[in-house]
Image 1 (cartoon, rainbow, N blue to C red):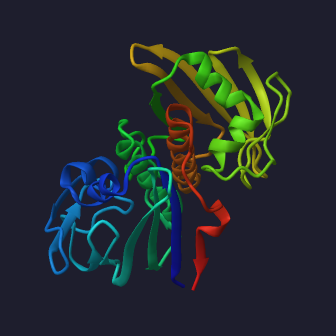
Image 2 (image 1 turned 90 degrees about the horizontal axis):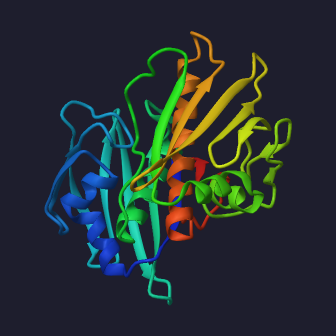
Amino acid sequence: MPYDFEFRVGIRAPRPVVFEGLLRIEHLARWFCGWARIEPKVGGSFKFGGETCPFAPEGPGWSTTIDAGEPLKTFGFTWPIRGASTRVTYALEDDGLGGTRLVASHRGVPFLDTTCGTVQDAWRMCLGNLKSIAEGRTDSVRPEHVPPDGAELRLTTLIEAPRSRVFAALTEASQVDAWSTGGMPTGRARVEARAGGAYVMGGPSGPDRVLETEADRRLVLRWPRDRGDLSVALTLEEKASGTAIYLVGTGYGPVDTAEIVRHRGRWSDWFVAMRNFIEGGDAGFRNAYEDQVREV
């Protein structure tokens, strides 16, 4: 059964800057793929691949053609994935405030999960990084297709902000609601920053309780499961360029590899959204998580 994905993103950069980010190889290598060769015109060839694509490369990569587009406004191409002729399109318009509204769609995808987590989370990571680089910041966590090593989830990110600022984003309900939804707060987030306190994100799944906390340094959360709860430890470390977050998830069993991969993708998306929220003031997405994918 194929699926259609659509992502609406607000980017605080002029439309020509965002359009350039979609087409120039040095930008594509920071948010979409590991390498690319592109002729930025209708009828031009587009070849890309690498281990940071939303999907693991098939052979050395993919070769396709830009078959539709209008300068500074749209372009699209067919992306052959596992025998399916999927289609990607981008549409841009000014938001009236000096920024850009981007609509990115990927239609006809024959599955929901890939080797770096869900297709949805992989695209959200990529588009979150596009937002960051278009706004003049650096890229962040990228899709990771390497299988987990053992029965733990490990992930690291760097946020260019003081440790106290990052800890506040992790422990104040309104801020958790903003980044955990990707920019569309639901009002469902609830945080009691003490051991035993509630910890509920704005989306439909995730942790439910605080297990440990140390101000500005460490937060340990429980993620409930029927077959045994998980523990997710988030440790903050001051760096010269900001704050590193080290995530370690434990409680998985030896047969939980697929779940670790899915959770790695979910936390990676959250980290990219958190970084955009803290550094740029906005996580970016303009349509709700549950509205970004539909079965066709």
